[in-house]
Image 1 (cartoon, rainbow, N blue to C red):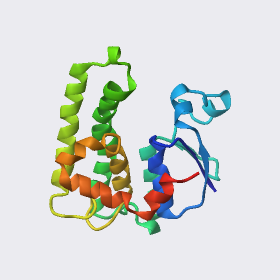
Image 2 (cartoon, helix red, strand yellow):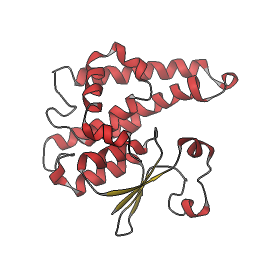
Image 3 (cartoon, rainbow, N blue to C red):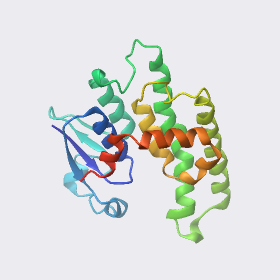
Length: 206
C-alpha cells in the first residue's frame, strides 16, 4: 500500500486529491501544518526519508520514495494509465499536459508564494512592497494565460478530460482566491474541479 505524508493546506494536498481521483488504497500520515512550519517533525528518522523534512513524501510498497508534488503526481498517473489522469506518451495531448504540469510549479507557484509571504506570513516590518507589486503583476499575467487557455469553453485544461494538471493548478490557485474574481473562466474552472467528490474526500481525509 502507498503511504503519503501529508500536511493539510500544503502542496501534499495535490497528491492526496490525485490518490482519491484514482481510487488507490493508501495510508495517510498527517503532519499538522503548524508543526510543518515550525519544523517540529524534522526528526532524524523523518529526515532519513525526506532530506528537506518537508511534505509531500510518498512511499511505495517496493521501497520507492518520492518527494516533490509534481513528480509524484506524474509518476502516479503514469503508473496507472487506465485511470486516465494523464495522456499516454503517444497521444498528442501529452505535450500540453507536461506543459501545464511544469507551468504549475515553475510559473504560477513562485509569484503566488511571494504574495503569500509578503501579505500573510512575514511580519509587517519584513514585508517588501516592491517585491509584492512585482509578484502581483506576474501572478495576474499567469492568470491571464489560463483565462485564454480556457476561452473556448473547455471544461478542463486539456478539453473534456480531467487530468492531474487540473489538480496541480487548481490547488495552487486556492492560495490566493481573491484574484480570481477578475478571471471568470478560471474561477468557474476551479469551482468545477472543487465540486468533484474526490476533492471533497481529500479535503476531509483523516
